[in-house]
Structures are given as structure tokens and as C-alpha cells.
Length: 137
Image (cartoon, rainbow, N blue to C red; front, side, top):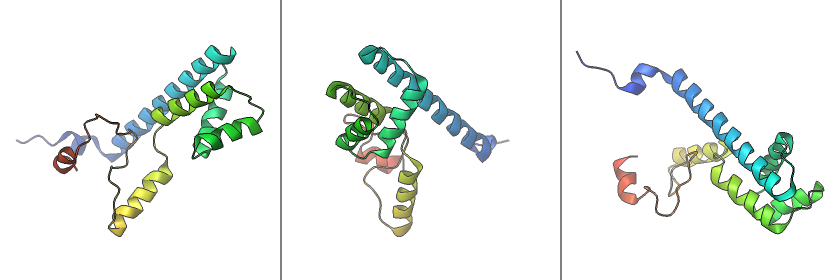
């Protein structure tokens, strides 16, 4: 009697629910880090403010745009805080679903990006290599 692979035994719903839980935990972690950064720089640790800042970051494609959105909402943060928040959210935040949809469209049209779409970003020195990409598509 042969055992089925783990993914086949779990079912798609379980895997999808697990992925959603991971994204929720990741988001909660980002919120906590932003709150801690705000507390360190301006002495305010507020979850609603952290959520708002994360949302402004997601609406911005460049750090200058992010800084302008903060300024437009009367958040007069020092440049170092803005840069720190940008880098932190950029590094930790999962890719948005629109990015995944765009990647899916590229795959269907026959073109593909050099890196696969994932909630985890490949960084210099990571395990993402051409050899690994061929071995593990």
C-alpha cells in the first residue's frame, strides 16, 4: 500500500486556509514592527496608525510618493523614519494579489518574469539560482 503525498492528502481547501493564516500572521507581524518603529521615533504606538501607514505604503510605488502621502495626511516624519518604514514594509509585506494576477497573465501569454511570484522576496545571496529554478519549477 502506497501512501499519498502530503498535498494530495490535505486537500486544496486546507492548503488555501493555511496560506491565508500565514498571510494574516505576516501582516500582524508587520503591524507590530511598524508600531514599535513609531514608538521608538515619535513615542506613539497605535495599531490604527500603523495599519494606515502600511496602507499608504501599499498605495505608493516609490519612496517619494510614500513620503508625499504621509505629508498630505499631516504626518511630518523625519526622513530616516520614512525610509525605515518604507524598507521594513517593503521587505516584509507579501506581494499583492494584483502582482500575482499580472504574473499569471504573463505565464498564460507565454512570457514570464525572471523570478517567480511569491509572498517571499528573493534577495541577493538567497537560494534562488538558475540551477535551483530549473530543478524546482
